[in-house]
Length: 83
Image (cartoon, rainbow, N blue to C red; front, side, top):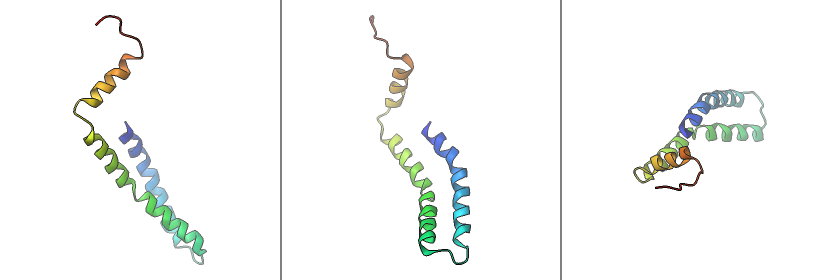
């Protein structure tokens, strides 16, 4: 699920990165603006790091833990009176 959100954000973020790169090419842009644009492009470029972090978290979970949690969520918060 979280991967889907990141994937949805990837294209708009890439477009923003391209705009920021183009803005850095504006003649006589103040240095403080250029620095902020450089920081923005670098931050957007870390989207792969986010994806990698999500993958690492998923791989570190014990086998079956996600399925157990999903089943718990689907069953709701009702108390089980009979086993």
